[in-house]
Image (cartoon, rainbow over all chains, first blue to last red; front, side, top):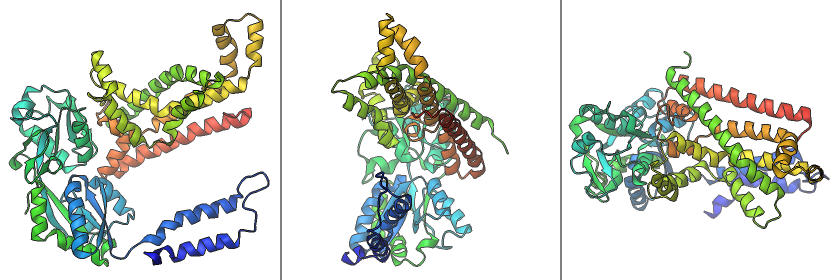
Length: 283
Length: 226
């Protein structure tokens, strides 16, 4: 770490600032000279660049995988010494960011189409992708005992808002819509649907009580295979398309040993068991 | 390709939201700005700071607290429920409430500056002519503060059009009710529909530039600073 504080670009620019110091930093009227101000701002912008560590991997993680990935990352660090830096969000947003030069090295997608697409477009390494988890959808309420018979509850319609992730952009949203279509309720409930931009926000809508019910990821409310808070109906996997979640090595992570190590680590038996304990299926 | 019906619905909703919000803000922002401009109370500092908070707070903070406060267990939610209105998140009214908080400083501060610039003398003159406080306000203050009202309206409207984080947090993305243009653009980007995103995003860019051009162009001409 001490070596990091001596990082070259920072030293260079701050030395330059010091060298220039005798020149007036401010004009007589008390304002900073424009060119000095610009250089000062640029120096500050470049400061963080000195901090890139070699054994670090930048990981973009689909929001539904937040809880398990936190635990996996800390185990990964303990077992391999590599550090995984996690960013959580919607897969579609990560796609746009990766295509536009975001420094992610591994993507844990919420679907099985985005990694393939990145691969075709040259942003991911061919042959590196695999299904790390199969998502399970749950109709959930923070109220204990409310959700007993899910389809029955939906048919009765005794609620004002039903939350789900955006079906256009989130696989869990698409699965939720498919479930409603399967039950023949998509038209009747249309006016009561509220959409979260990703599954984390959908959970927030329900957990805060603003929506009485919501289709969320089982992993958000389950530990060791059981729902820990509120009540829920785990939607049978045969009534919605499978939520196959793929991991892929991105081009930026090609030469980073920590990136490949993380992908290998995700496929290890003890980690697969951990993923399963969060309510995911496996392939 | 041009704008489809979904996009037009989002644009219409955005303008409706910005118009209603601006009207509400002028109604409640004017007395707040007047008080801030005139008072010698010790509360001037704290109230001024609260009004300015949305300038520095991330919209996520505002949106999160609004979601919790307007929810069934929050104090606003309890109040609206006791009135039989239900809860506000995921409704147009909820977005108006959120936008009013979000754009408050953009209306109050130009008004406050305009009121302060008037000074005491015109008010004293009006008083010597036996004008009552309301008469003074409508016959003296309003005409003198007109540039301030124009700036406040434009900024309040434009800032609400540009709102994103708060709507995302409390909106629920309902077409025709809470899916405004900025959220629609975000949706398109996430769905990788970049062509549609470009149409709306380019339109927003042009709109915002024109609004600011009108605002700063007229300011330069008048030599007036808000």
